[in-house]
Image 1 (cartoon, rainbow, N blue to C red):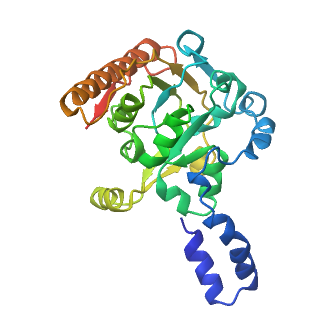
Image 2 (cartoon, rainbow, N blue to C red; image 1 turned 60 degrees about the vertical axis):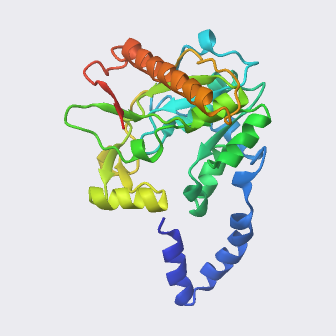
Length: 298
């Protein structure tokens, strides 16, 4: 976030290096890669080298995947609803592993990210490397029309700005926007929950609650910082385990059928919440969350 202010200060001070970097970077920054399909394909070579299954187990531990064989049909298109969002979303990395990716390789997948992250240098490029696209409705519909799987993090800023509580609650936020898209295009919703996401770093509030809400509402940005081992950016050594739930079937429907469409949205939303709850309750003891209740926040 500080990249632009620092660069501006260097330019004002007459830094030739800063000017050259700006001239070289500007065309890349202005190219709307976050609104293109299929996006940055060259990054796949990097991820083949930096495969979590080969590179990171010695640090975090083995990446566990549960329920994928049982619930994922590689030929089927899904809207994958992933929880929890957390502060960093470490689980994004695992979409680049063969362990998870092979279930979606027939149709491919794209992950959405908040529009604001594509305006921040470095953060923008990292997000594109993870296969992210702009989260606006038009782009999501473009992905679904292409037959590609769409990965969403419904908790968004509400989960990103949620700090831990003394009771250890696991707080998640559900929405209906992605469900409306799923119904409009007739695509099942696939719930997932990743244990370990909330434990890799600690959320740190940078602003008072009122200011945090103002920034979230007006700038669509998270002001929550994070701290890992020794108070640094280095994440803690915790295992990650993704649990995949049963797909929620939907009936393709035109949104113009207002009353019937609303009833379908409510049905799918309740079924989706119930499946997330079931996933959590059935797996929490196995992964050390037994004393941490799951709370749906408004």
